[in-house]
Length: 101
Image (cartoon, rainbow, N blue to C red; front, side, top):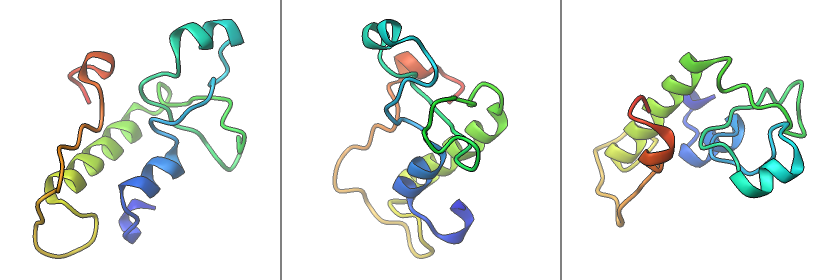
């Protein structure tokens, strides 16, 4: 979907990264730990976003993360000249996501 000109927010919404939800964890565990730093859902089969499949598809997570970083670096998700962001954009907390992303 990202290749069709959807911006970063749409990619995140569609693929479920950095979204709320328990992702199949027990309620008490979720309350204390919070949501995983990266989440991806198969919305065709799991519209309720219950099963986080990010670990099952690391290549997709990596590709979408690179795409999001490019959007931020370019200041846009659409074709055109590079634009400056009007604020610092921190797409992930590096201490929770790790250097791979």
